[in-house]
Image (cartoon, rainbow, N blue to C red; front, side, top):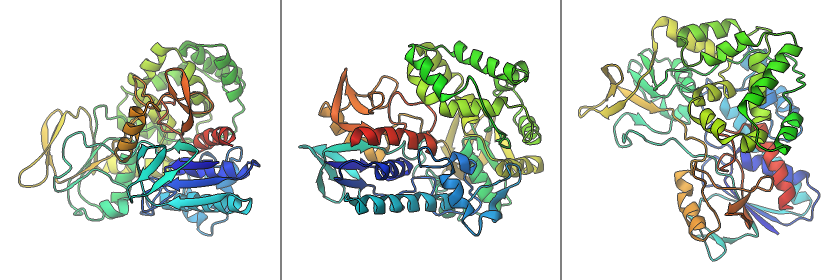
Length: 480
């Protein structure tokens, strides 16, 4: 059997690592990725040291069942102490260093696979089509595989304001070493978005000595939550096992999940109402006051936010497909910003940089963005509650889940035309639970699988490395 893996990011690394641990009959594996930094994906290319990983080591392992895999890798580095985040009490290395971890894990997995008899090749080209039972790549190659795994992520940002050819506009900010270092130090920099990518950009500009104003533009003006120092969590109700039991019973309501959180906090002697009030005020509390309060609460012993963030990541993928449709729509639309801010919080290191910039007046949060236009003489006019000018503009709005990357659109179009794939009404490729085989109607395709957020029944937030590793391990068993 020959397996083709389309995409060479964290999903592919997790799948190779899982296949290397499998004891099935060896065959062939070909990984296709046309990027200059295979295994690293978009965010983990070599970059500025100021651009840190946005999660503690225990949440970044790509080896299923081994939360300490990345933690041990970091601990063995001589420079780990340089990157200590005092708020978390743990090292947060630059994103480029985490890219080294992904790359070394992939190469170690390939070595183990070859040692056990697998033939493994890496083709540095993009798969652009599928015809006559073969994958076609942009270098003219034609590759036949018995199984194919589409693990391409959501791709780069989309230019929603038609500014791609405007001087001073940057649609893809990563790597920031390439994009922010060419900006004039006193320029007024506008950043579309206020999530983690926007935080990365502000931190990178600061580290590069930028002195001009920085404005984060969004409709809501909401910043990510601030991560709290980890404490031991031993939940009784908010566990993957509990999620599996609920899923086995059929449709689950959001109210039922709230009741589980209420019971969890009650059993541990903590207040539910104050916790719920904080979550419900995400879109209404003044952002700078909220950031300041959360920086002060990094060591707060109340486990509410920690439990909720854990539950989103560990229970969410299990329960999302069986959650009542009205509740899914509510979470995906009305509560999108709250869920994404909770599930992808900024680390204390970056939170303190943001607070310092906001207090000095150099950084501004501007809500109510409606339009951006390029100015004929250079720069941009931004429209929110007023009109104002920016000198440079960076796009920090990442694609939503279920978005087909531009470079994969031609391939997906071929798969749709062949009747191999089918898109769900809300976006994404329909897939069979567990096997992740493409679904057309009720018929699973025997050849094609999808891994990650392109699956239509995946959650609407980006899957973290342990989540990808868990999906990859299940898929590896089906593939072999």
